Image (cartoon, rainbow, N blue to C red; front, side, top):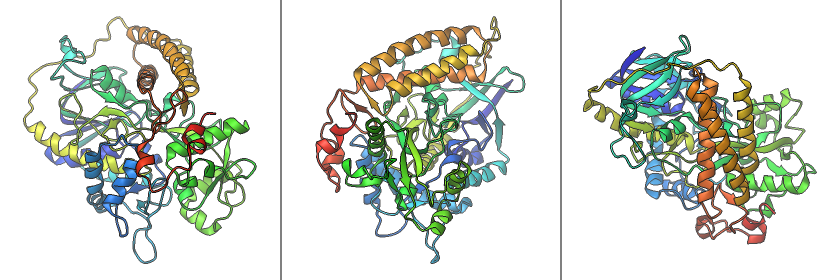
Length: 544
């Protein structure tokens, strides 16, 4: 099948849906999503969305908190425009129908999370993402210009390469003309040509064994753009959420939102001893990179499988009212959080790097935009501040829509691209080749490229990834395509990008912590009002 549209959107989370809603009045929109429309990382988001709403909070405070968390690698221009546009984007979301919790006085019931100096996180109980996703889906489903293709898997974006024109990383003017998409009904590859394309495919958490990401988070968009010779950056900065529910047989790992610590929950060892005072003056509300490394170190010291998150001192009724999903989930596995500590471990949670874009969401490939977790805007730097991700999606999807509408008016389909060539391909009847390679990949990344790294571990990972890459490419090049095979190929690509970037960074910064490089004086150390206690109790303590 061949289809022509004005705007192609790959992904159906907050980034993709926001863009689609905004461009739909200017042309035909096609949304391609690899699963059901609401099966997205957005739907899983618990804590909320950060924005300046009331005094004493200010844009400057939010900007400062973001830069501090990002460990000096944030683009201040991008941080400033994102924060300064936050309130307007939130009001627009509310106008579309999103409902956030309010106090009895009618003001929004703002939460406080790690790294935030003020209460500024809007939320809907502990299922904020689901509320936002449903609101946006309602808008999308009712728009006559928007077509939705569920369970369609995007294989590659279409560029000059598919016209047998040589394209490499030094080529200028690489242009996106749409994408090749695997049709679940026919099992054939369809061609969708578009004037403007948005990649909004989310993160890549499934490159690790333990992740809070949904199973669909396999780095597809990032891998596609990298193969098309687009610019990808900062892939070493993988955020591990400090507190996922320890339940080894469950995938994905259930997230215990940071807002629970903002509500008063305290991290403790299995023996009930607090430990965060050894690492940071902000205790359990330190930024995520610090808390995750602290937990990782405590587990190495104790040999335990998890630490505890203690809510027992909190008012039970208020606890259940604010966190009904967490209460119900824990109760389903035999944990009453009003009486028992919650067993928690860090889990891969957010990809801070990705497809490099500018202030309008434009990638290095013409007519190709990226928004959400798959993108690298410069907002997060070396570590994402909690609840800034949903905000980033709103801001950059809005900005991308403005640019894409203008660019689409100047575009015409002047070239005919060939359909996907599957001649000579055979059906792979040995799924073990895919499933075992996936297990190997996740084991390599979890063991060698996790929370704490070293040159030796990274070299070992790199060597093993090279073998997996060769095997998977050989299988890909001779097989009839399946989703699992394509996901494996993409995740191996992601593992390579993370490892390559980590090897190139000869320092410990933010989410990248290496045993081989003593922690330099960081941006946090210079500007934070919370001064680190001393090196022996903080940065250099990790990994001993």
